Image 1 (cartoon, helix red, strand yellow):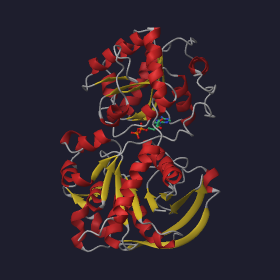
Image 2 (tube, rainbow, N blue to C red):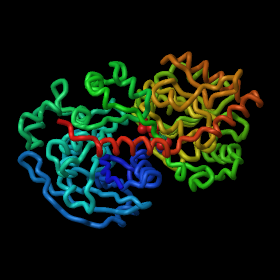
Image 3 (cartoon, protein in one colour):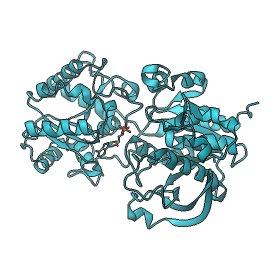
Image 4 (cartoon, rainbow, N blue to C red):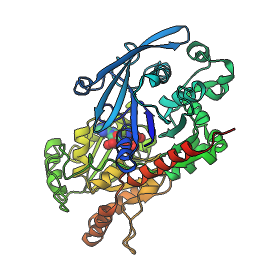
Length: 476
Ligand code: ADP
């Protein structure tokens, strides 16, 4: 049995802001189930974690975490859920705040977390053979694991879920927070600042990212966000493993959030759509094509493409619901669009897991015209709820959605290549054309029905990566 410790900043069901939370929540269970591994997860103990979970945690130990001239206090808690052991690191200053990210000292908060993980490891009741860090918030843990060696011979894996977010901070933080000799600065520094993602990339034994296409794309400046030279340097150690979803959790037959559960092969779209329309104040019509977006409202998600064409698209006989939070610019764009088209468009500017599930269940189309997309889970969840994805061909969207081909009858969605608003409008109109052609639409739904993205194969890929690292001779 291999022992792996995941280090991450979010994990369902405790705390989630996006796909990272879903992946860290579901991959350990898949590794346990399919590969018989002991995977545990260590997380910050945010105030935002619901009381329901906090009450179940058991106090383990308190310890000091040296951060430059300061000594911070940390406590370690643990909790078992669905056969997986989770550890939480609490601190009265860094994590007792509202929300998860977005503070001026986020860099410092996650340096603290990563340093605390090093102090916590000797207190855990298992010895990790692999430390697997996820995204920039865990980059320093990967670096410190190599530098400080809290467990002899422990190997490291670093997964890029999104290379855009890197955790950058001024160089003087090195002296102030790291208690390390100067020789280690080079591994943490990039372009004149400390860069937590670079630290993870530089120090890890293996780098993974969340789709094969994204693994290629980030070698180039357009996608690499300034770190493409590092990806190039380490390209032999970079591998793309597509994410899966937890098909027990995202299961329209059992999902407690949705109004009418699907029954065996009977998809209850219309029933769910009518209830949703009632709830959102839209005209009630089970046959009306319903388009939805559920997303962080950030540039990455292609909102700029919708801006110039939304009014044209709203001339069609459709309904459109957007659920999301993010940049004020995009929030007000959708807010005012809802005002202009009260009979057709509803914008819910919040984070709402229950409504998200209802939308997946009720919608005919899921729109995701991303500028870039490392993997994307939303399109996989959409497919699971028999909702047809409309995507731009980039990263994981390209690897999971094949455009419908009327001649061959193949394909599980719609896609367009160029980051261009009119190409998006064309594909939206084309999707409507197929929706109105019963034979073709039924063929497309058949293909959607066959699309499955469970974790089984990807868990096996991760297991092989760990196996190779554990058995390979120590690098000279
Ligand atoms: P990213 O990680 O870039 O945000 P993904 O598609 O990988 O994008 O994952 C997004 C996850 O977050 C999905 O589970 C999606 O349903 C969920 N999500 C995004 N925005 C919201 C929201 N406003 N309310 C509820 N769930 C949301």
